Amino acid sequence: MRMGLAIDASCDLPQAFLQKHDIAIMPIAVRVDNDTFKDDRAPAEVQRFLDLKLGSRSHSAETEPCSVEDVQKLFLEKLVLERDCVFCLTITATRSPINEHVNKASFGVLKNYRSVREPAGISGPFLMRIIDTRTIFAGSAPAVYEATRLIAANEQPAAIRERLAHVANNSYGYMLPRDLYYLRARAKKKGDSSVGLFSAVLGSTLDIKPILRGYRGETGPVGKVRGFEHGTEVLFGYAAKRVHAGLMVPMVCVSYGGDLAELPKLPGYERLRAACAECNVELMEAPMSITGMVNVGEGAVTLGFAAEEHVAEF
Image 1 (spheres, rainbow, N blue to C red):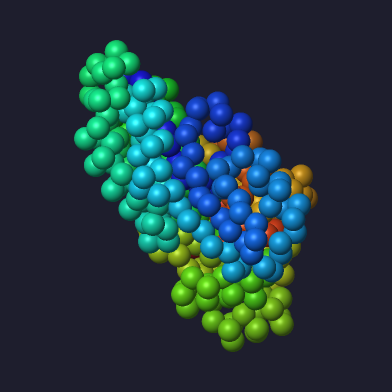
Image 2: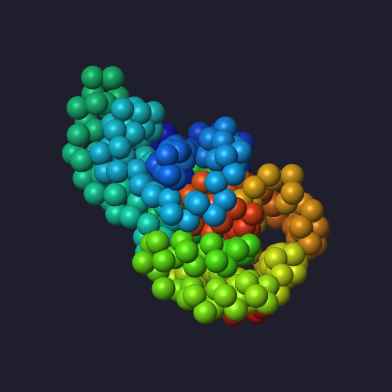
């Protein structure tokens, strides 16, 4: 059985990894003032977004996830011909409508795939399995990574789906923003009251940054630090401890909302890198999606891993 993967563009993973495993991307349209971006994780488009230095204006951006019709088009024109089973992984359904769009699209795909496959001489059924990773950005990476391992091992679709659901339920996505004013403005734009004006003013005045976590469909602060650089040291140090404690999937993904060359320079990063090397855990570095930068702000860090349930200690 030919199995494959499709993800929404805000699942942060390195481009080389996506190409190696031929992972299809369900894009997101992003509009900032008069500029429109196709967020499909293409490096050139991410660089164009950074080069325009939209900065504080991005909080007012409009984002439009891949529509039901576009998902159906991707599958019926391409994936049903190239694969017999596709696992679709999305960021948490509580923060984006993409999961709902894919679920709705699946009805049309499963109803019409035979009329596409049979003229091409492809027999047999087509399967489409949808996984809500229940977290965001780099936090979605462990489930995608695990899916590639299971597919390579020729596991059965039912076993893969069960395992991915388990990994998703234990995936942690952490975020460290640089600018609380930006975060508050973006939250207000989306009707999210999680970052109030008082906390934004107080935090910016004292240079206090929240450490946010996406876990089991809920997103919110789990700690606070003084200063972004100190925050990265705390976050990377925490991740290093989790690596030593043992992970469910042998990988950690870190995404950065800017030039990836700056990532290793951040305080605490070498400690995380050393911990991963010592424990034979793959450390993946990814550019943050345009959608991620619009929602958390440029220069932010997100980090993801999968582990048994534990208390966040910040």
